[in-house]
Length: 565
View 1 (cartoon, helix red, strand yellow):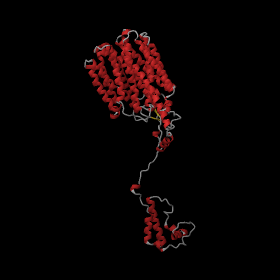
View 2: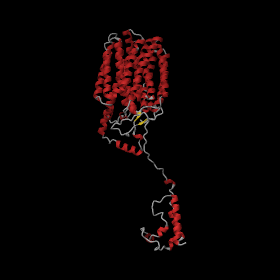
View 3: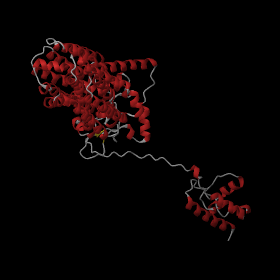
View 4: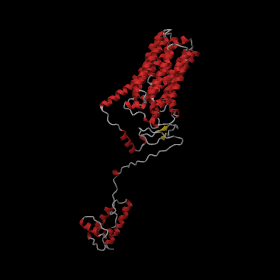
């Protein structure tokens, strides 16, 4: 066999091994040596250390040097043609970006996208375990990595100057203080009922069951407001709906101030419940939508409720001691709500929540505007909403029962005097302090565990009111019960933001708050029925049983919701 043929066979063998390992990137690298030998220009390159192949050369005119046919060069050619494997350390997993597949479930509708929201063009129905029927907007977190990075880059706001930050802080503080005053007026309203209840009984000559009808008609107003709030908010926005609520309460206090017939008083309590429901929903929904310090602000917001409920019994007790002018107390309440109406209009100017949030530098809950569907069906289809509402009903009802009937209990069972109305102030004062002073403990041990601790301690303290026949001890214990019950409602509202869809947050919170306010009528009414049959001594076992129910409901509330928020 000639040198050229041997070298050609060797080339074929090497090429076969090369294709067995990996494809060659250079088309010349895998060519057989016979082809190289047949290329006149390439032979010149080998002699002159340059590569300039030409397809027009003839194989017969080539003269291969002897050094190319040696055994050593053939071995070197074999080695050079074998592609070495990459080292283990150089092998890195390759990130493969897959396209997002949008699956649509049957019977679902596509969410309408707000022009300012950087979502995908379509909406994906939630595939939660509970079969929730709500429509879930597609959020940036569900996009592919490069799309997400691009959308995040596009949505980054420019750096703010110190003057702009100062303006945002001032606007944010103004909005928050306005809401705090609104909630203060709610506390004022609820704190009034306890000291005034014995006077209403004596003025209209009513028993426990009939006087409790004011709570029933309050419930009717609360539930009506909760159902109407969703429609009114979509149509008119937060600012105008809150003005509607305050005007309803001004009208109600104007009806109460002349001490007219008892049916007129019941009608006024319907308006009070309706107005409170609208305001409560938007105050909680607005603070829960904040991105900065929402939990702390929620505590201070409900602390202002306790402050109003602390001050109002001090004033109402003075009016309740007057047999002829007791109803003039409602003129003060009307004046407060006139001020509240003026303040709400001056600050919010009837605007929607999204616009108000943008004014203070918040992005707002744009997802809520991205959904155009039946919100009533979506809210009522969430099982978490009903569990939270059950807790709210028991808690708020317990709160108003303690503040309302404790005065009657002290007067009847502990033989207190007309100053016993101040016990209600002690309860609501503890409520206010608990919502502010115990914030650090909530953060330290966790809000879920903290609520269990507060409920157990509250049961223990309430049992002492039940079994210890001491006026002073009972007054102090009632204040401590208020201190322990205080943080529970802010904790409930904070937790609801983690397990409820953010695009339904305001509607859900309105429903939860309204059911809670309905509880402020249902439980006091049940207390009145029990008192009319078994005496006011039945108050304490009823309160202890309701506190135990709170523990059970809190234990079954989900820790988190596996739906994009």
